Length: 264
Image (cartoon, rainbow, N blue to C red; front, side, top):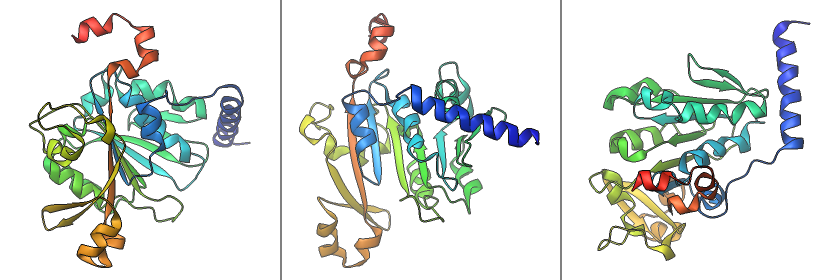
């Protein structure tokens, strides 16, 4: 038996044991809402230590048994991926439990099924060009406010699944930043007087279309169909924003209660 085949069988056994012996699930509250939404684009925003990054890393696990599945998680700069306690460190405590083989040199995981999860950067505005021709069913942005508006919408054109087995979608996290383009994009969910999220709008799904560089919003796809005709049936995208705070991360607060003081 080849070494590659032996390793594949070992990985399959590891997956089975992880599923049998350990339940990995989001915390109640924003994490659970983020992973439960059906929106094409879901943005989980809030203060540091609110559990956003872990929720983002959980998202691909629902499809890693699909050999055609691939996900890419972007940070603006590569060092942000490799920093202690950053995306790579967090993922190392999670994906290997499902039999994933890490390849740190290329920041990529291979799962026993053939599915892949990759981490990458978009350091320059033009970095998106390197993704021409890519077909990525799940695109994730960690700290979306650090990316340029043009990068976000360009990568939407790479969000597709050639196998037809996964409905392509986007997931992102963000921290508050009134100077970012993102502030305008999610403004419906934010109280313009206080700058804080509107609680009753948390997780509410809205729809948008782009007319050139202008974004037109509607409360439903049907509302956009009335305005733009049948083209909205294909072109309209659904969006939701889910806010979180440090107090929603009960596990993190229990493990490191002093961090609240540091954050303040």
